[in-house]
Length: 183
Image 1 (cartoon, helix red, strand yellow):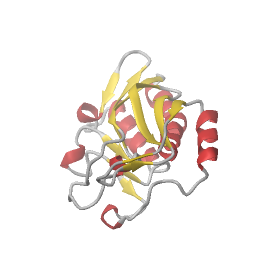
Image 2 (spheres, rainbow, N blue to C red):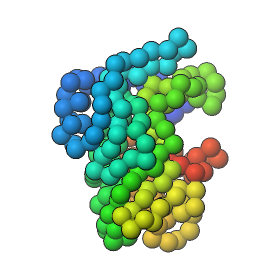
Image 3 (tube, one colour):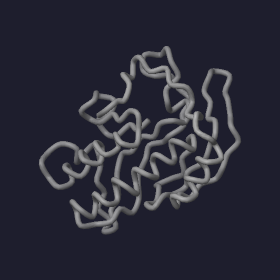
């Protein structure tokens, strides 16, 4: 994994420093399919500001996901600039569908003291990448070893570091054995 700041010392606020209208325009220009949502806040401190329901990218999604526009834009750029080109380069295939476990979920971090980035709509958990021939590369099954699939997933995770503040992998801890946490 990687982190631009140490996760235990991060005090990042919701990702709204950028112009919300510009983010939506950039997301639209990226080719992402999405629906704008009203900002929402919960009594227990969760919130998603500049919210979108991401429905698809250059690759499809296994299901829609609610997140902030900047998170959706980062995910769109990861798909276009890393995941799809890397699949062609290393596997000779094109990406078809990205399978995620979810994005927004109102919950605390494992320490129980702070809202998770999922609770702010600023994280997504990716568990598999489906290729155009139907192969499904699963983090749980393909992360370890020395196959082209392993190389692809590890390079994809490293490439995610150029688009996200924090990337957690199976090498990070036990809780991430079956997915990449991107926030």
